[in-house]
Length: 586
Image 1: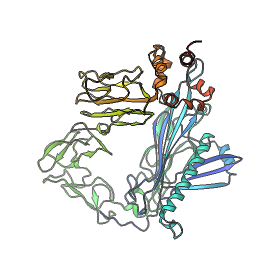
Image 2 (image 1 turned 60 degrees about the horizontal axis):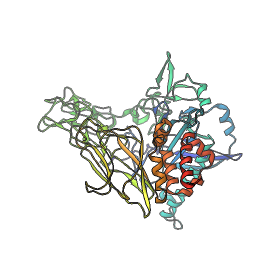
Image 3 (image 1 turned 90 degrees about the vertical axis):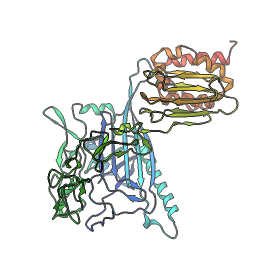
Image 4 (image 1 turned 60 degrees about the vertical axis):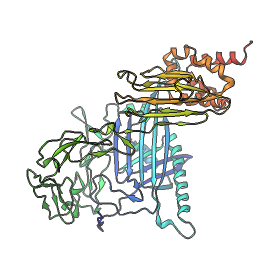
């Protein structure tokens, strides 16, 4: 239903990526003035978003927003994804120290880029250094997705929409390049409510305030407590601060408050939702009420109807002649149904029965009259699902290249779906053979080999089989294909499910056949835990496969890099086999 935008609703301020250069060092900061969401995923990882993603040419209203946004984008937004790495640093969002902020005040801003939406994830993982005495080091990965809206006003006679798009793409690419440099030099900050936060820190810094709570929390009676709704965590004051009038915060543990749609600075301090905002917004109808425009004076929802949201123009009927226990009901659960439906079911008001949620939908709550559709292209194995985790991607995964690639079970690393059949074909270029590594595979043994992965020459059951399994193996294994081509099939039944597998492969020059087989058949390759770790490490396997597929790429890696990547025992094993293969008579 079309809703008119009120003239008082100004557009929310946009996020900005500001980069500058001083004394040859790039530094960038991302300012997040509105629509921010901070989610601490675990002790060593967090994600945050800033702005509103543009969907199909229309800017969508933010969560819990009572007003739709009025901006229509003339074309799909420009999207770019980038991945950055910080060595020896942990993903902790911490306020930047005062001295550093003073220094940065002298910088002359060279460029800023207005961003419609940013989604940033920081994840730390401990990486074992593969030497005997070297300590494990911290590596943090930052994944950032940027969206920039196309601006209609920039289109002119001299530069049409494609030209504007190219310009903006280049501008965003340049900004991401500078951002990469600033991250490498630990000079990237995010600004919330006037405070700059460091994205990740070196362990030495992190230990300074070791006893402190994580960002968004404060210490109370020896316990870490998350800042409540109506407040935000201020890094500067290291405490929870109530939202100032004209702003609100409806989520716990956030780093700023959201500007009210009216933007007129009125309202109560510590507003917990948009309905407590100042001006006309303090007169929004509360749940269980409605009016012609959603504002007071409001009418209470009559018996037999309910309204769960604030600021609405109607109430939903319970249907089927059902009544509510009282006027002003706020949920379908207030309707006096003849039966009380459990999760995985919905109430049908016509037949007055509980019906199982159909395949592709789920319902986690009691007493509801609807089921929720699975997101994206996922679906459930059976009807009556109670959780979004039951929604699984049915697509058979992987990337099949001439030189390297991988296959993976559908929905990996989540549990694979029931009754699925996947078929992959690997056809190497002439004079090349296939090497496969199975780092680990999880197939439940309980249901008598109902889920099977098989690799053979062709679809014919009598053709040469290279590998077949229907159970879990957590120890890695490497092997060469017994045939030049491979037909691979994965089948699951409707019994138990598991995480499945992700199996990489490489095709190599057949002149090296004898050498490769000598290596993969040697028990020492699997004997030590260090060696097993190599076969499970995606990055190291990628480097090994890169060199196997194109031996000249060996020279891309310095001796030092190779030493750091692989333990001495592994290099010793390879060296002895390679030298014997190249100089058999010495």
